[in-house]
Every structure is written in structure tokens, then in C-alpha cells.
Image (tube, rainbow, N blue to C red; front, top):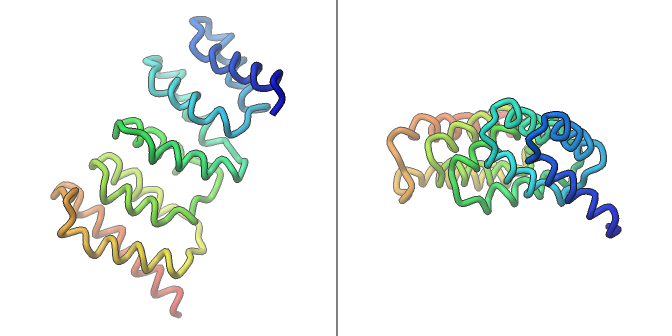
Length: 180
């Protein structure tokens, strides 16, 4: 990436924190049109920090409207590296509203549902049930094994039990469909 483009991306990211709505909207439109995967993490940080609901919604829409395939890997990486559960849940929410298919990340969503909070489990449940597939048979098997051992998992929470069991039932139906 050229130095000029990198500087322009940084300027637009900074403008996302401007007080003037016009500057904010121009910056998000510019990032949507000319940004690349390098902006995912800094834009996510802006989304987490903003208190303005309308801006937060526009930033969530920014993520949901991404259509570049390499962005999927970067988005999953950013989610997995986040330390605050509420931030993970916010970005996971953008995935189930996304135009892209994240079926290849089935195992990652299962792990996040098992390890995460109730809110994260709800988001992962919604994502999994809305994935288009096809799913890799090995991913389904690995996910089922992970979910099957949930009862003994250190992150098990009774409030998540229904969601985890429902994900397992969904995957068992998917597995049956593959065998048919």
C-alpha cells in the first residue's frame, strides 16, 4: 500500500471521531468505498468507543456491508483477539447481518459460543443458524465433539445450556443432511 493511501485511510479513521456529523459521514463513506482490511481493527475501536447510537449503527452497517473475501479472516482475527465480551458480541452481531458467508468459520463460532458469555453465545447461535454452507464434514464433526464435551467445560454456564444444545441439534441435522 502506498504511503499516500495509508495516510488517507488514517485521516478518515481519525475523522470518524469528529464532532461534526458531516465529517463523520464523509469519512465512513470514503472508508466504505476506498478502504481495505487494514481499517477493520481501528474502525472497530471507534465503534466500541462511540456513545452516539446513530454513529454506532452506521459503523455496524459498515462492517455488515463489507464484501471483500479477505476481510472475513481479518474480522474473525479481530474478534478472537478482543478481550471485552461486549466488544466481541458487537462485532459478532455485524457478522450475522453481513452480506458475506462465514460458513468456513463454523468451528470458530462454536468455540466462541462455548467459551464466551451468554451474549456471545446468543450471537454465535444466530450466526450458525444463518450460515449458508456447505459445511466441511470435518468441521461439523469437530464442532459436534466440542459441543458434546460442553457439559464438562470450565466455561459452562447454565444460562447458555439451551443455546449450546440447540447448536448441537442444528449440527446433527446438518450432519444427517450430508449423509442423506
